[in-house]
Structure formats: C-alpha cells, structure tokens
Image 1 (cartoon, helix red, strand yellow):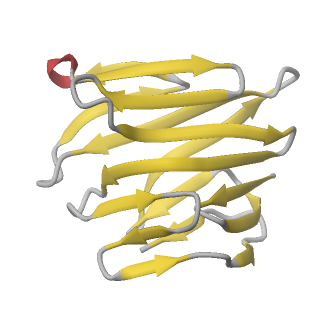
Image 2 (tube, rainbow, N blue to C red; image 1 turned 90 degrees about the vertical axis):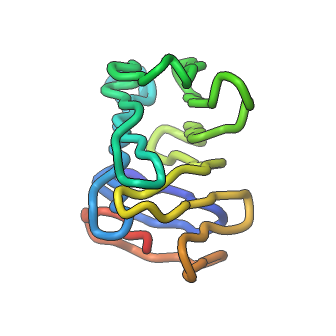
Length: 142
C-alpha cells in the first residue's frame, strides 16, 4: 500500500495504479528494499494511438524518439525532447508516499490530463485538496 498525492489531492492506501477515464494508465511501485520508484505508463496521442511506453521506469517504446527519460531512485521525469514539456513527473516523498507532481498527457480517449501542484484536470472535471482512502484499490481520475 502507498499513499499518492496528485495535484494537491491525497489518495491513501492505493495499490499504485492510476486509472484515467476507467483505463489503468499509470502503475507505480516502490521497489524493496531501496524504495526506488518503478513506473509503468502508456502515453497516447490525441487520437488514442500509443506513442510511448514505460515499463519499470525504462522507455520500452518511443515513437520517433520524441521523448526522453530522466530518472534517479527517487524521481522519474518523462519529457518531450523538443519542447522540454514535462509529460509525467513522479517523486518519492517518503518510504510509502509518492507525489505525481506534474503531468500533461492524453488519456486513451484523447482527453488531456493536466496535473499541477494545486490540481488535476481532465475534460470538464478537476479536483484539488481532496483526501480519499481508496482501501487498497486504484486512484480513479475522470
């Protein structure tokens, strides 16, 4: 179990999965015993086509080499190579807490999810400052 902070929202007791519009799109694990962050993530374009994929914090698919990955044991940042826009940034805040600190990417349905320090927003929904115990389940956005 881990706690996840996504744009000032705190989700307690998660299984590390973030579902976006009903589809698991981000999976975060803290590897024992080091607690290094391992992220699996599927990146889609606005039409729902997969354009990059991370498996255990390794870029396994990167169409047209458009993305670059910067990682340490406690931080992972995926960014667009040309624009330097951050697609996804995950930080380990404590041994059982991760912070989804910044993001800008599309769901498989083509909606843009944006995460900032204060909120997450997708389509017409947004959330900030919420606290939810998901009782060992996944975080659901959108």
